[in-house]
Amino acid sequence: MTILAIDTSCDETAVAVTKARRIISNELFSQIETHRKWGGVVPNLAKRAHEERIDGVVESALKKAKKSMENIDAIAVTYGPGLAIALGVGITKAQELAKKYKKKLIPVNHMEGHIYSCFAQDEHEQPTKDFEFPYLVLLVSGGHTELVLFTDHITYEILGQKLDDAAGEALDKGARLILENDIYPGGPMLEKMARGGSATYIDFPRPMSHSSELNFSFSGLKTSLLYALKKISKEEREAHKNDIAASYQEAVFDSLCIKLKQAIVKTGVKKLLVAGGVAANQTLRDKIKNLVEKQKGSVLFPTFKSLYGDNAAMIGIAGYFRSEKGLFAKNIETVDRVPRASLDDLEVF
Image (cartoon, rainbow, N blue to C red):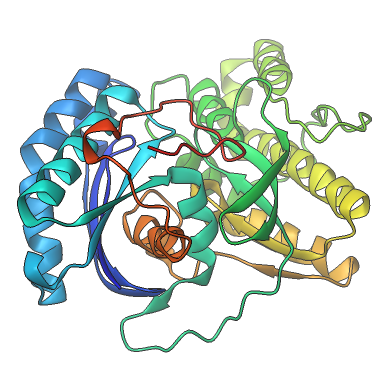
């Protein structure tokens, strides 16, 4: 099945063409420059940019794939979670194309797309990674931090999730506090600073490390950083900004790994999948690899660098496995955005 996939869940206008697990094309228009001067995503600007770019990105994805709409078997689209005003643009375009070309529509949860990004193949490869269920999944991004038990295709159980800030959000806010500006996105800048610093400079707390729950909390850690910065002079902050960044980042990543280890012990599942934008951080990947090695397990990350952040290829791949279970929209008109969509409560339209 050849799928045209669309994702407009936040600030990336993304369209891809996929065939089973193979990525034929994967096009994306980033809105980072649009939102950077505001220090974060501005919803109405995101919607406008999606509306202005969606047709061109669809055309580009089809052209790169050397396909026409007549060659497409179905259309997959993200229905949530995400920014409501942005999700609506992708859904409207998917509905329009599905009706015009008489194609089936596959609503896809954005987070399951991230899960399936670990099994993607490029255009020329036959799938080589067989599925060996169950998997323990860590989804870690700017808006989400979740531990999920992945027991079969399109079958998920949420074991733990954020109680306040997501890990990516904590990293973004940390960079802004250290640099005293509204840098966007902050996570990559924090990572860059941390590479040149010592993670032992400040001993930040590891939130919920003594709790048996598998949930995550980072708001208290952010407050600890704020108090630490207030205790030092501007000169010390500037001289040791890399050390502060490294110490703070270490606390965030240790917190993730503590809960990941607890989940391994509780479930007995040692095959891990780690996905989402924050998983692009090399320090985090190294810490997880080290954890998995000690637990005598294995870990898969998204196959390609382009699959860590938001993209449409992962939506197409998840859409394929949904189609295998017959999970097409019963009525194209009723497919709607679900901004707070959850993996353990998949919508059926």
